[in-house]
Image (cartoon, rainbow, N blue to C red; front, side, top):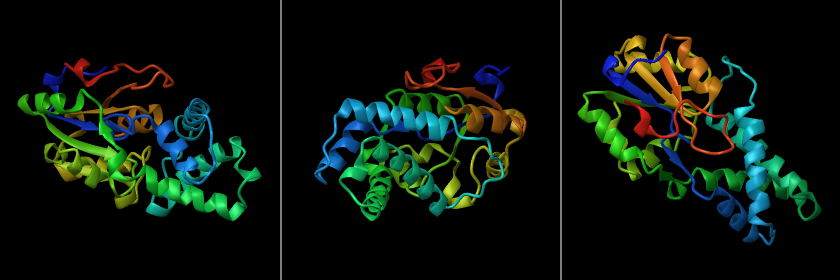
Length: 234
């Protein structure tokens, strides 16, 4: 059972769908395809995005020893995008090679910092945590563009460390990525509270190194979490 914030020395965070998001991802996806003369209903695309996230991300099999790299991250997301394109009937319009190239381009589009926004509760709470004397860090499965995104959103300066899976070769739910964060910050596991949105990556994995964790649910399609906003951390 997690302690009140006063019982910790630090709060560590997941990034995507915890601190930041791409708002209206279905619109971005639909508009990207429309530019290639492949037109689809935005609501249908949104439903398929939710289905794909539940299948590929939230329903992903636990594999703590999986090696991570920029290439493996790209492949994961390309497989997810391919699933959506198949469900949209892209094969009726494009060849296999064209679909493959579109998946590559979608990956590059969705890691572009310009599309990301912070959740509205983030900046105020990072400032609140800092005022409470709490240290902060990020541990995220993300493309190498994460640091650029955090700098552009003007929150990079809050974090003592930013541990990105594609840069360190470790991927949640491998507990080793949490141990690395503790080594880099010089903190003990019992002094850190971790906040994230994924049951395996962000709750099970930090528990393996003795770190308390709380699940945040930002969207209606997610399984309910302990909190829905950083405002609830007291």
